[in-house]
Image (cartoon, rainbow, N blue to C red; front, side, top):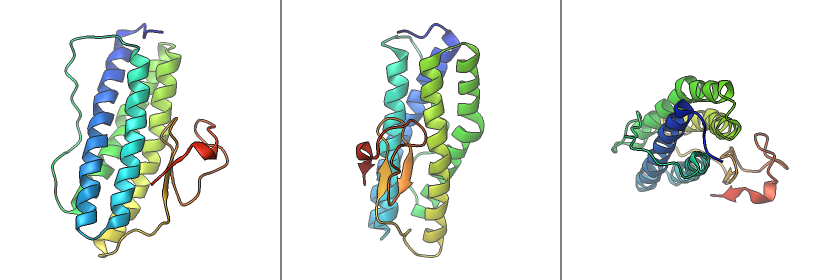
Length: 184
């Protein structure tokens, strides 16, 4: 099934590009956190990088093979710095998606009755809210010279829902069973 509306198609391509860049940026920042002595922050970055990959794949699937000459730019920072600074870049990027990007994209998909795009944008929006909070907790710990404490990061492979320590019986966003959650 192909996207019927050009605006939603453009939004999907933009979201795909942004999520793809976030995936790679978080993998890089995770390795840096480990080198700085924050192995759990590194795992948090790795787990959330996987969630961003889930979002990118969902958006790409909704594009449905449609091709277009489009420049995809992502507005988040990239490059490397200290872990505290990288976490701020992550927080800023997640909050941009939560406060500005995904609400507009979701509203357009709803208005244009693009059910698949609506689902994809909703999944990403709900996960990004959690990611911003987890990155804030990690940043608070890093500012105090400590690593964030948790046993494991768990990510739903369907929607990117992310939780620490124990998966729910069913994902609160998409309903996937807890056995499907990927552990980091």
